[in-house]
Amino acid sequence: MLRSFVVILTCVFLLTAGAAAAGKKRADIQILDFKAERADDLISVHAKVKNVGERTLQQVNIIFRFVDTQHATVTTQRTALEKLSLAPGEESEIDAQMQDAPRAVWVMILAERSGGVETRVAGDGPYTVE
Image (cartoon, rainbow, N blue to C red; front, side, top):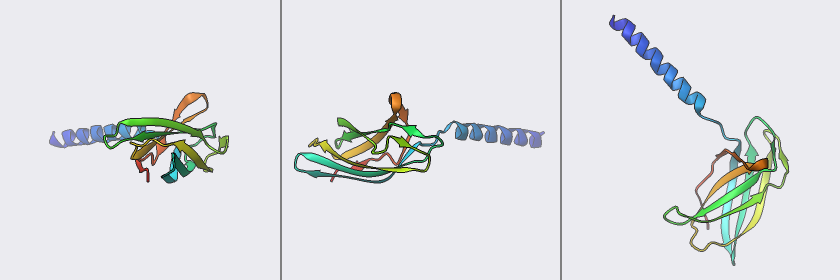
């Protein structure tokens, strides 16, 4: 009887763990390299991103959410990837100038593809604004 209970309990545990792992979605975009630094009244952003998903992404916009020391959003700014279409495994670079947000100390990265559909990002930050 105890043996049957242990087997049933083990099966329930394995099924629950498998369902949790199956519900976890993979990222579509991965940040490979990122740097944000202040110069004059601008924040220069340099980044390299990679499509780590399984489908080609069209018209990807990268969204920078600049936050203060309390993690409150100071400003949100966006830029498009240099490539209009990003195939699986393909990389693209970002070289952009953003308006300075004096209270911003970190930046979080989000992304969306054509039609404003949110795209999951691996390595989304926070990154220090130097």
